[in-house]
Image (cartoon, rainbow, N blue to C red; front, side, top):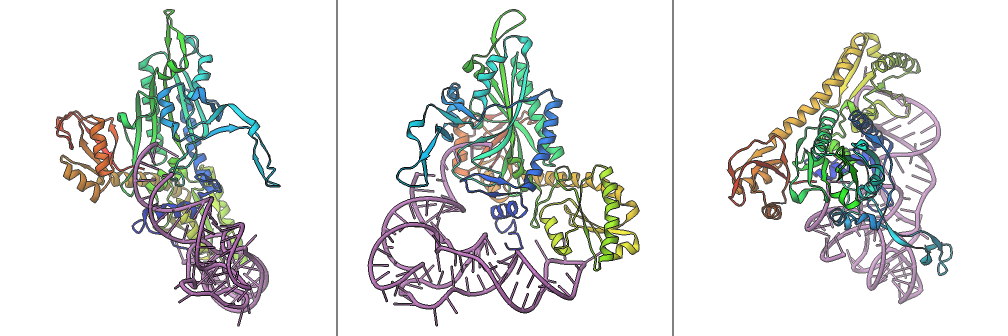
Length: 492
RNA sequence: CGGGGUGUAGCGUAGCCCGGUUAUCGCGCCACGUUUGGGACGUGGAGGCCGCAGGUUCGAAUCCUGCCACCCCGACCA
């Protein structure tokens, strides 16, 4: 393994791939298109899960678990949803293997063990969940039904990339049922806001909240809300989606309730999800040519202490101080790792922790012991300072929020300088090529125009931003009248 | 699934055209010693069915055929 990471300028996607592997986040597996998430990468995902799970419960949701397999007949019940996912479904057709008479010691699929009905490996769980909800809902008293599940799903992708697109991935999917359209709509918006808050406050990634156009909408949804983030290469990444499903699934699965007035009505539904793709967003938003950069909120180790010593006595002295620091920091809920491995020298440790994005590094050596100081190195700014041991805990505590804020600001500024308003198609193409990023432009509202722009430029409408203002204008492509700007970008 | 490319030690590679000793080099790994404030150095060592299966030949990493895997570019997607 070479020591240097490919730089972003040299080859952005190579940089990404190398970073994921070298920072020990994940690796490709023996299964085509499927990744192994390694302990360090999984620890970051667990941090995301913990915070999201807390936020879901705070907004009244409960966790449950539904089967991995969906009988084909259930899967196809909501036609639009089924059609949307049909091309990427893995299907179980048999339930048994047997010894292969032609190849001793090998197995083959038992032709006698064909399933009467094929099972679809869930690409998403609406079908099985709505089939179940049918039995859970009879009265308005059973509503709202607010369920979330943490699960894996499978979408048979042709081209895969670690975290960004894999055949199997981990996610959470919320599924809710409501009495009224208004209530379901506000649930879909609420959860999109939860995602936005989580991604901005916890992951330090600024996002645009908005609505998807018809062609980018979730199969089976009436409306899809989303949060869109901008990566350092100028491409957009959908970080989360929340769907207003109308009564589509209720009708397909016959989920009715009796209202206060004694009338039968179909329930109104939402679903919403974020996945391990957020790991990709995290990496591509903050990291640099030295490796991963983690916001303190997501770092498995917020602080690492590296001892510097020549003799065994010095090592012991340094360790004594390190242990004092550790207990002080842990008392403040700051996670610390003492890297006291004797098998690596300090330089190698510095490089490794930098590659793995540890927000703050403390080095303690003989000079520090003499002076009552330590050396502090920030991962986000790559700056070093020597601070007094007495003040350390307070300084570290302050730096945790400061680093978190600095990362957000930096990403916010990047997005600001990579968001351009354009009024002509020439400007559109030029901006896309030169600066990339988000392009704010008028659009006539037709799928036809959207598709033509996509064919010519590869850019798609990421969303109709929630906060966009009413403004008279003409479509950047067709010249037809338009009342608001939408956000275009090339996307992951 | 279309077009292009690549498979040699854990990783990156030389050798292949033009077949011929024991398959090259670097990183990593192991042992010992010296080292330790930004990826240490020396000495010694281990590690290979040259992607797989056939074929040609006295002889195949090298030539031929088939298969498999991976990568890049397109269409599809969170």
